[in-house]
Image 1 (cartoon, one colour):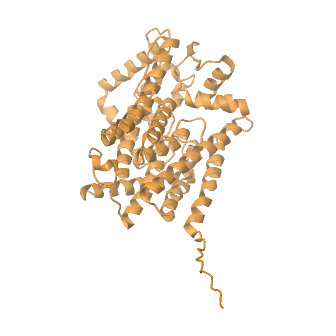
Image 2 (image 1 turned 135 degrees about the vertical axis):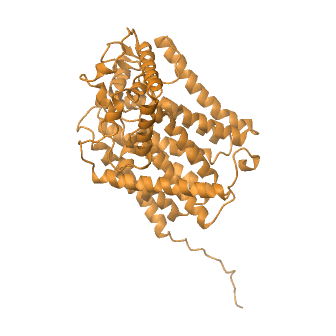
Image 3 (image 1 turned 90 degrees about the vertical axis):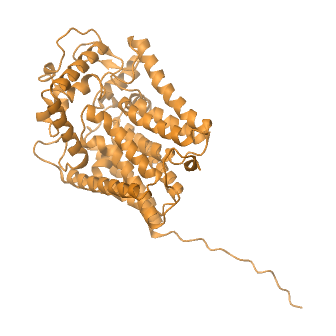
Length: 439
């Protein structure tokens, strides 16, 4: 008698493709390039208290004085609302691990590049993006090392916004229930509490959510509550410590020092090659100080905003010429802005600018073509809306190459979606006011 056993079918593991291997290998490369690039403008063995642009002073205020803010170097009063709280509090948290800024740099990049990678994979799942097109997103960043460097910075809000805005972009396209809605709301709140001039971007994201999910209050309301708590929580805190309810800081692009810095008689001749921060120096600051007595940070902010508005009213032609310069920096400029060495632009800056502008033009021209064919995807429409909302406050104040880095990150993500849809279109066409989009 012959004993016959049931044949068992074995499934061999599917081998990883070359694109998959390259994609996963590219992530640690991004991280290392970002940390290296960001470290080049930091002093070795520096403390987190040495973080530039006032962040170090704000971190020191939290650690040593147990309150947010810093002493105004010109007037000597305590400035409660000079900086939004996220970056100073992250720096203070890093201080308790180690006071060295290098530790803060590494920890920050590990966390925020992980968020960016998560954003990429959210979008990858939503649009079934093949590994080869996801790899295009990474390559666009690696070919623009300046952007990757800015994404690694700990002393500029753009270093944090790069990952946060990318994550918000992906979350808005993948909302599935209250949990993901809460995540989107927390990211919006974090973006606002990182840089208050991002309020237009957060409001745009909120309108997108309401327009798309108005029929589902569990999804539509939760993000609005998170953003509202952040806005009013900050305002109530500032009122408690300074007596003024505030939307944001007293030095943002649309009020106070930075608003006046971008709208005054001296800015046009300096911008964009010479940093307008030069007007903060002891030799220059007196030219932008108000002539009326001021007793605190908010009186100073209101006086500077009034001077800026007066300049805008009296010099509309000059303001238009300045705005055209800002548009040139955002879309066409290949030189460094501002220049680290006067009259010299580094090769990496030129390469980054060329890649950025070509990618931006390609993505937006394809968006226009798809809109005309009524085939624009949600991702393309959202990318355009977020870009416009992001740039709005910078046109009110001033715009440099580093400010564009978070938008170039969104452009790189959008490019992967466009390439995927060109090869295998997905049912993702329409306007966000139709309920059919919610599925």
